[in-house]
View 1 (spheres, one colour):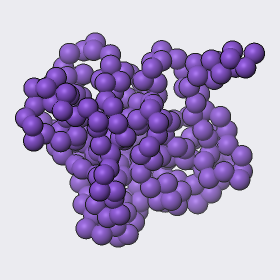
View 2 (cartoon, rainbow, N blue to C red; view 1 turned 90 degrees about the vertical axis):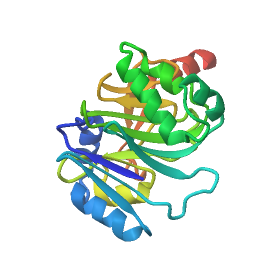
View 3 (spheres, rainbow, N blue to C red; view 1 turned 135 degrees about the horizontal axis):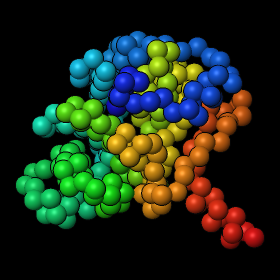
View 4 (cartoon, rainbow, N blue to C red; view 1 turned 45 degrees about the vertical axis):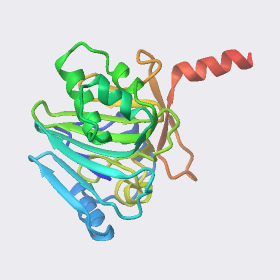
Length: 238
């Protein structure tokens, strides 16, 4: 799955901009990235949302136990990959039919978050149990909400294209060829919200997520880490 957003929607993270500046490498535009995805994935579907967002997905090479899915409801677009262990109880919590799948559940959970503000977003993602990664785009508010499960079982990466778009994808090789060193693994157990303003941890939403510059040998330009986890590990070692 792939989603690209212009700087009018998502501000390119400073850490990824800096990583690309430290080690210049070839990049391509967001439009070329989407075209490459469509051309290299069987039966790929691409959805243009206004002038500043584009989403794409394919069922090619997906895991039967952790499929990719797409849905749109009330101008809320969602790409989801994985499976929720507690889908049944979450359906009851949100008053959904037994036929509702994970991507519909995430849309309803996002709507609850948006409409019940200031409902803490970490409560929404913290209630999800399983292996998952998802990307939500709310066209009505130009909001982006992205999350990865606490164990990072579903790979998710993000980077910056040649024309300054921020791209999210489950295929790191695809982004590597498009974003150069302006590339990082999306940190596990974290969510990104344009409403909240940046990265946050499920467990420690008030702690800062910092970026550590990567070495030249690594494919990443930077690695994002939760400061509270680092501090805890240091305290245990000390």
